[in-house]
Image (cartoon, each protein chain N blue to C red):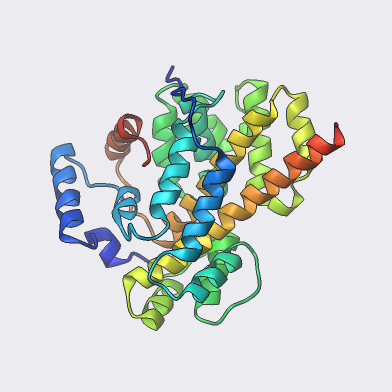
Length: 193
Length: 115
């Protein structure tokens, strides 16, 4: 269910900001951004900081690869908003057909072995976190990942197992393809925090 | 290709995870006990009072099946959007941190196993 105050903003300043950004960018400010503006005294800014570090901070994974991982988590958690939003950023560096193939089934997608290994780790982390074990780590290492690379994958997984869940619970509105592209450009330019 | 920005002073993931957990437990306007219980329930922890249990459990188990009725019941019980929002976010954070903890544990076990 949508919460009206999240959509409108919880202060005059934020309501004006939402209206201004929507007018300048000429698209409806996505619900993800409205949540980021809301209840700033709570945990949102800390989540934004971790998301920024995981998605834009130093890592052996490129930004499009990390966005592809986020889209994959979103597909496993049946979050159409996040599949669209992060898929739209991933295609800035990865062929759209490959992005679609990964969201469909990464096992048969034409991607490098190390990315497939990262997605396998991420799938177990998302679907069966209690089953995640040293053996999963060792398989990923055998496929060429370092432990630091795996920690970066786990951070993307943790963050998007949060974002997808509140996006679903709060019934985020699904933008048009053009608005997804506009949102992707904004997230590439401004980041997450 | 878009490349990652390099930074020598980027905060570490464990610190950011701990900070997020701490913010859920120590900030916000929702009753602190309910925030803690919602976080734990979203992570698969013990049942809590209704109507909070149905929503927090569903967010942790399969958020795509959260119903309008589950969110509305929590909003009505708490009397404001912001308190309902904090239940939702706390449960979602619980689900995410459960996964971070599982990955951290698995990586540590693999490190121990290989010396």
